[in-house]
Length: 378
Image 1 (cartoon, rainbow, N blue to C red):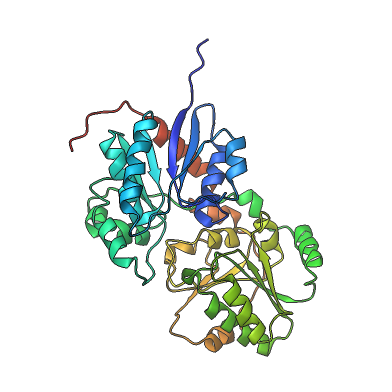
Image 2 (image 1 turned 30 degrees about the horizontal axis):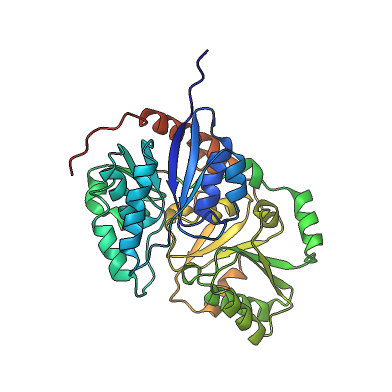
């Protein structure tokens, strides 16, 4: 009997580290029927990502491109053109790099790749020197993509504009999690708290890259105010990033070194969440915030900013505070909350945030869109 090769989907990312988007992709990749569908990854960093070895073990390929930076565009565009000339068999390119997806999908369009997916995972951008270039890229995105995904309506409107939403071309593909992995477990909670020496403490947790978007400085100020009123408070910070050293220095200046634990990059997020009492997530902006879904799956009460879409509250256990409020005001409200744990897995599944359910839809989409190349007008 003839054994057909699996179709290969090119996933376009920055680097396959343990971020929300990347973890979600790996959740799908691990569970997808790899006799039918395989993932390859175009990354934009020279350094190895934390999921790279697992990707290779699962049969995926990793292709490295230079970072997308102003002043480097000509080199990057040349390499993109050469890439699609060399690897001409892809029928589906799924780009997750927000506005910069325009560049990859333009090259894919010129290579006559029929299914070109732009996937929005954010609902805002930092104010830095790259902003004009990002705006330019966003202006050209819709003409190069022909499928439009977003983790929320807000993320879709931000990247693609209201006109696309009005035409009902947007697919809201929710940031699903493995509910069984995060389901609350009292035994795991006791083990984690013992291992971290935080038994008997009020444990606040955060998972996220140390970059401006995640607003760690405000988080530290808020925790400082919590600690002033409850000296049993402990803060767990999971992640790495460019601002890590700055935040460590701030913790030291505030005299919080003994009560703020920097845990680095971890593969046991589900276990760590069992050991927390509260999840604190004061981001400046989010497309959705997949870790908020994970926190709810773990039964945690979560506090986030109004920069996070309301869609992130799928269990009625998330509270949204305005960043115009002071850290002290945040702390005062936080200390009045009931932090009892409740089983919320069924609610998450019912609201469409379970990996297994969403994977069925994604598999069907990929198989139906794996058509032969057509001549695309230039």
